[in-house]
Amino acid sequence: MVNGLYSSGRGMTNILYKQDLSANALANTNTPGFKVTRMAARTDVKTGLDPNEDAQRQSEMQSMEFFTDWRNGTMIATGNDLDIALVGDGFVRMQTPQGERYARTLSMRVDGKGELVDLSGAKLLSTDGEPIPATGGPITVLPDGRVQVAGKDRARLALVDFPKPYTLKQEGSGRFTPYEINGEKAKPVPVSSKTTISSGTLESSNVISVEAMVQMLAFNRNYEADSKVIHAIDSTLDKAVNQVARV
Image (cartoon, rainbow, N blue to C red):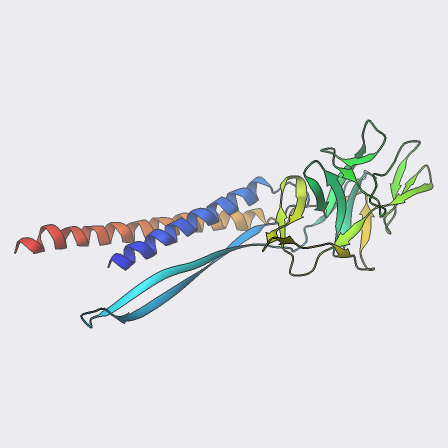
């Protein structure tokens, strides 16, 4: 019976985590390049005999795993040549104060130094690992990643990929960075030759808002059900301790 309390309590904890993930997904429905994070929980159920050789059941939560849903969002035409999105696997490499970051879609601008940056000021890097100068005329990004200013090549955007399955942590503004696992981070690898850049396009988030809202409602119902189980077990234990024990 006490195991029932633990199982229901852990179930409620899992539901709270899932509600947070769904709420975060809904909040980022309109964030370009956002990827949904999902959670999977594994429960190990053990059975055996106690010291009095009476059957006992022990339910134990083993682990929770969070993973990113890498399905692509919808390609949205913006008509702005400084909006880009990758078609195929890979990421655009950029430099931030926190180190290198990677994105699948972004809006660009030219900063005060005349270099190509995203809207938050992160510098887009060339294949040489250097910032890209972009003053002197209209900017065009070609499908192969070449950046042209007034029709002349200035540099080529650094496009990279990572070993699959991806072990990347999602940050704000549609950026990603490798997780540190056992003291090491995944290193970029060359991007596929099939990957291209679509200019004047942004990739939307892969959040399906209706699905996320339905999940929120289901989580609320499951939370209430676990709560009722806890109240029922608590009531039974109360009777066993305070009423049956008096007989």
